[in-house]
Image (cartoon, rainbow, N blue to C red; front, side):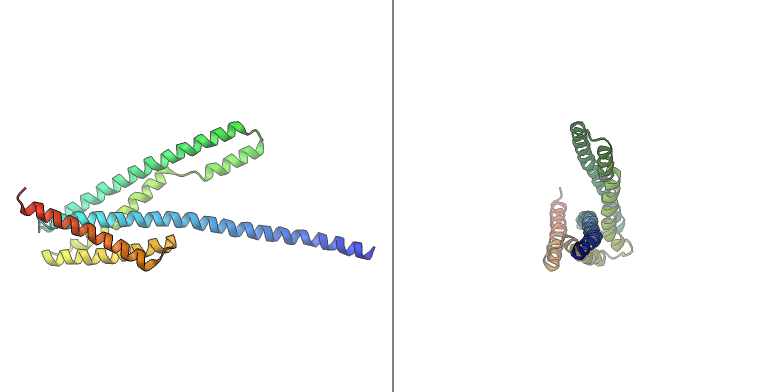
Length: 222
């Protein structure tokens, strides 16, 4: 009798311990899942900023190859910022809205197949909370692009000398490329040195090709 009573007591105390362990495991999984989602958003923001940086800097370097006027260079960069931010926002809105339509259609098909009462309503509410937001995605994409595009604009805004201005723009863009490459590598859990150098070389190539081709076309009198 004593041994049976002891085993029953052990069983009673074992259940709460298992519940605590399961709850802790679920909390850890939830934290990992939330961190993964945040990392994806941050990485997308870094890539958008890098896109704004490279495209705007390349535009400014291309115009700077044939026009030494600072006003022309700044206006070109500003036009590139506005056009690029609008393009990124519209593209992201259309893409995320298409994804939203697909997920809503899938939820509708699943709802028609299941008839589980309250459980169905609970699952439907949870699924709606996890749906993507097209407006939020569009705003984040435009903001990230604009942040990257501001780097060459600010670097060139206060320098009158033509050659010095081009050098400052290249230096500022180089530093920003290294930072964005490092952030993207950290968020994507990739090798930081290789990723930073890859982003840096890609940005340099974009600026050099735009500068060279524009210079060639401008000097040919076309």
